[in-house]
Image 1 (cartoon, rainbow, N blue to C red):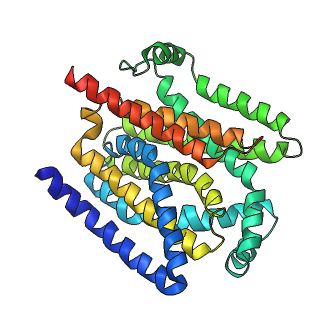
Image 2: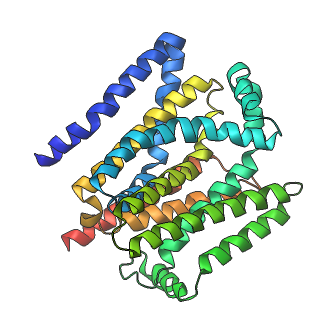
Length: 332
């Protein structure tokens, strides 16, 4: 009964906003636009479930006020920042244009914008892949981690955590290798990858510093709030590029991905309130394996194309298997 009440309270706003947004899309572009927006929303939710699980773990360390701001202020970052402004800035940097010129192309010539965004694909994959690879490796290279799902593998990975910053070393070597394999894109890939590493280190360092100091709960929540939004950006950039393969209309892309992002964030808060990660012990493990698979897919895409269906299958497979294992463990 309590779960039902919590579910209703949390999902009233996302459902209402989704209906209003889809209604506006229908008025603007008719049934074809409505169908495409719904398709993008479903894809965003499906591909981002592992993101919700990882976000839920971070969200438990934030105050109730900042958990609420994660749904209100954070959705502005998710919809307008990650899915609208950030791609424009990436296109501007890659094509040596001003952000205003890139925004003008996005609004007046969506096909040209999609072409420019596709050209920036290697840099996007390098940034997102490096950041997400660090997120997953940081989790597994933890000597203090005692609960293991894939025991044979995770037990040995945890031992490697004795080596300070081993995950950063491995990601740097990976970026060097990719830089040499991608002819003509070496500088672009290395720059984007190093930026991803630097952002991760800064966020992790700031969160750890605030966590060990007394009386800075507010500052700690702010840092974790920023970290969650950077994590969301790394997850979503690949999806933004992929959305242009479905439609070139920017309003449809922003509407569809925005609705999906709002539902994913609401699901994150629901997982926290229901204490799902405490009752399903391996779900967090599965999410980080899914992140590892997504990171490898993004980095592989720098060299050869990777169908989104494969990326989605990897994530869903890990989450589903972890869920089944958690239920079995709970029964035992």
